[in-house]
Figure 1: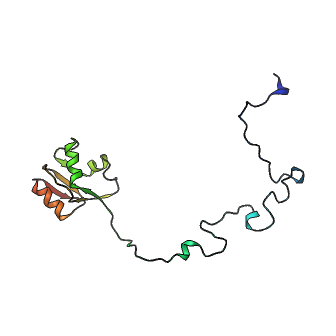
Figure 2: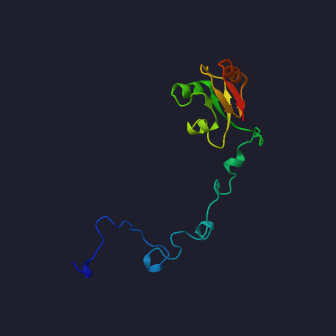
Figure 3: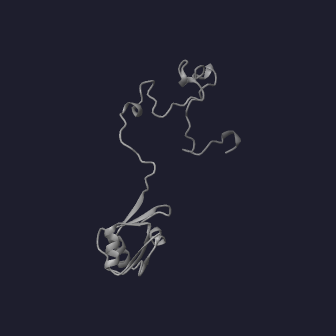
Length: 150
């Protein structure tokens, strides 16, 4: 082997494409395989998302309805049976606060938590959350616990 017969390793070179826009002799000169005129032949062209060639786009054709309240407050719901499961698994013993919800991935750090009333709570717990349903609050207090609103 010497400098005159060096070549890349087998399979290491993949690009076999013809380089466009490099003169008529290359076979891909002139229009560089973009056709003649029009937006698509120009450099810097990018089609709008949803553009349908001038036809009315789908997102404008479909009728709109309903109402999105911009002031809506979203709560992450956590049921009583989930709290009981935490007690059964030994994650909590007496107090459940927001950090416990985040650690156990029942809520994210930016979410608001609402305790819901599904299931039953057999353990005395001090539960801290942003909101409680009436049934959840009653069940927590019936078990001897305390519902603290953050």
